[in-house]
Amino acid sequence: MRRTAPHLRRDRRYGHTVVSAVGTIDRTASVQLRSMLLEAIGRDGPYVVLDLAGVDHIDEIGLDALQRTDARPGALGGHFRLAAPQPAIAARLHDAGLNRTVGVYRTPVAAADAPRRLGVVAAPGAYFSDG
Image (cartoon, rainbow, N blue to C red; front, side):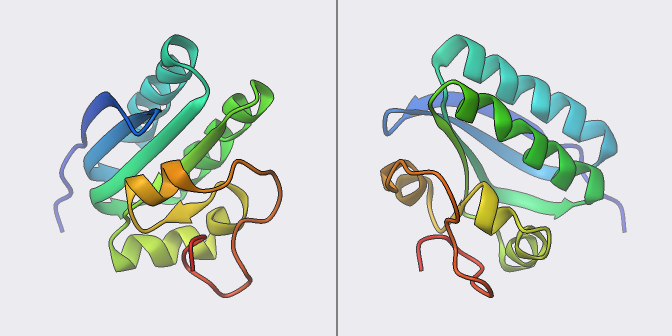
């Protein structure tokens, strides 16, 4: 199966920087994505949502990049949240534990509106942090 390179877009919505990704997040794309996320954190502030609605595949390197990105906003008093993954992507995020550490929400609005607290954000076995 041929994977498509991601298209990335960054804008301000809901009081957060929202980065929208479309396509595949693999070894090559994860470098580009993480760079954009870190730039957004440095330029726009530590409240960042990654909208995954258009992502059709994510590999282990991509999952690791998301996990590593989470530390930067937290150190600045903010947060990094994942939003709107397709079912197969939600399952991968769950299996990697990102629903409990980063937070995975059904929509970008839900991600932005979630309480700003630290710690476990999803129950064991739950794909989404917002129920």
